[in-house]
Image (cartoon, rainbow, N blue to C red; front, side, top):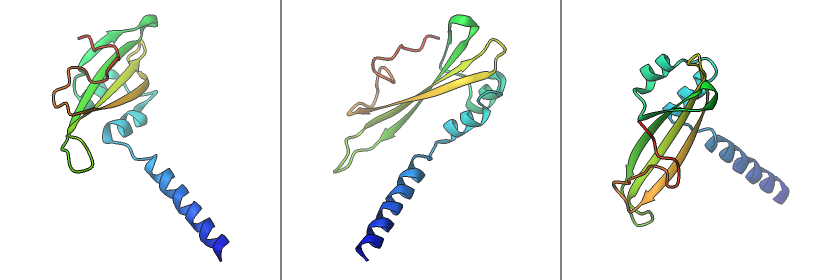
Length: 124
C-alpha cells in the first residue's frame, strides 16, 4: 500500500511540474506560433511598435519589447515591478528567426530605470 501511495505522489508531482512549465502569456504563445514564418508587419500588428530596434551583424534586426506589471505587496511578498523583455531577431527578409524572454522582479521599486539590470539598454 505504501508503494502505491508513493507512486501516486510521484506521478502527481510530475504532472504538476509538467503542467506549470507549459504556462505562457499571450505574447510568448504568439511568438512561438509565428517563429520561422511571421514577418515584422505581422508582429507589429499583433504586439504593436517595439520599444527599440537594433541592427545586428549579418543583416539581422532585433526588436525589443518591454512589459511591466506591478505587484502589490502582502505579508509574504514585497511590492515591486515585474519586467519582461522580449528580444525578437528578424532576418534580412523580415522573417522572425528566434526570440527570447528575460524576466526580472524589481522588489521595492515602482519605477525601475532599466528593465533587466546589466542587460544592454534598448536603443531607439
